[in-house]
Length: 373
Image (tube, rainbow, N blue to C red; front, side, top):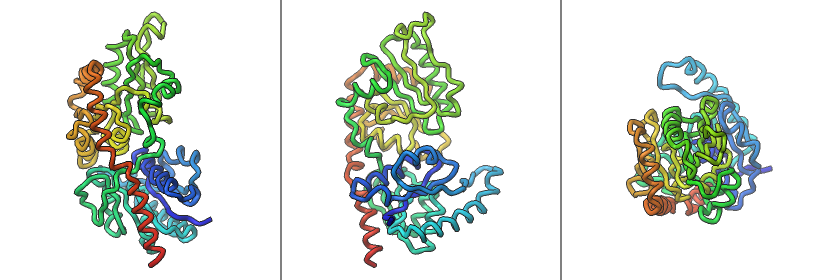
């Protein structure tokens, strides 16, 4: 079996989902899924997600480098060196025409191996401020596929961000009823979906807890809260004192959301973080959103991401210190369908670039150039 591309990156959903989106774009361009090999790490969410895909995959034991003092840093260099040797052996066996990196520490073994074997690299950068791994990989990359204009990366082409095919094809009007049925949400309820990122968000969970408690008796409201698996056991699911579920709010709490397309189609309003995957999926689906950038993000890159949407009227940006206003913002948009429609339309206009197919075209062009050189 030949291998067209190795797609590498992982650890959190913020890297794994874009990597799967790249793989999906290449499949949509005509490459068999078994010719797209995924390389990630043994500690990431990819170990759960990849077995359900048709893509062959390999996971290496690597850890990220912590900027603060941490015992984990002691293992960074030896683990990375071992993973690099293993990646060189893997790429020699697979002989891919191109290695596509979506960033993150899990991408580095395959990138180092590609350099050693003179395999061309395409860096896919979907944050407005590229991460450290992407900046490092881009130095010798054949090309960089970027989501934003004026990227600081060399040899950059604006291709839009990688977005999963199942998200790209969502019809929020046509898919609404079936999606609500799948999620168990009554059709007449105003559905607020809350996404704290793949690891969850303590501050967002706390703000939502206050909102849910205040609206416990609201028979017109539903909240689907993706709390993060590390937080889910500590979340109190709101219940009406009478025990009658129809007498108050419908409050659903899950640790991880396995059916995001249904959530995007079913929800009236999304509350989320400012990770690139979330921002770009809001853009392509046109879901009205309040986005709360993580205050601890490196170089405050989540605020940059959200501003790309909010400056165009495609999302409401709410900083963490302003979370006390979250309930007021939800209720303002709940009462104003026209404002929600304006948010959604502006978001979709921003998302047009992600539907172009330019990312797969760039990867194929680099692979073809390598094959003919």
